[in-house]
Image: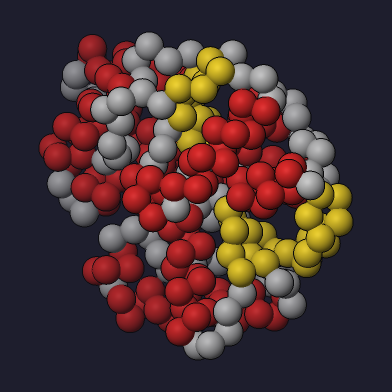
Length: 242
């Protein structure tokens, strides 16, 4: 099928290798890839800060960018959750864009969702020798209901020892603008999360959202306890090369 990539603003600005690797994996699986021009942001930053009108304007741009797409796949549970859960509210008084938003909701997926639940490809033939633990980010888990898909992909990576993350359900404290508005609370939350990452004994911390991974890895570096962090897409991409 023809897959349109949703290159989220955070990955596009700071971790473009995640988007590039996502494209390579999907192409390897036999799909045609495009990256529609005009997509910028899902509007979550403005929405979470209370700038609803600004968020709506940004959301319209995103909707228009993917209007002709067959299927849309993104590397962020947080951004896909924004579309699925808050676009209906944003456009409840705009029938035309409400319908367009519903169309986008019905054809948009977080990467692991798409690979496991839609393509039915839990084993990508990857090999990666390491001891890793997985952080289930809040939006992906609680808003999109993603639970087993990323774990199935990781359990099928040959050579990967996947160990439990203590208190995995706890938030890392990032929350986009939350970490800016409430820095002390955010730091206390990420400190607790970092403690559990270290407790796991893992060499690598994996996740679905680079915002979470950026926050956790930043704190670990601050306390001189560097643990390698990777998006699941990055690990799979590396593993598929071997």
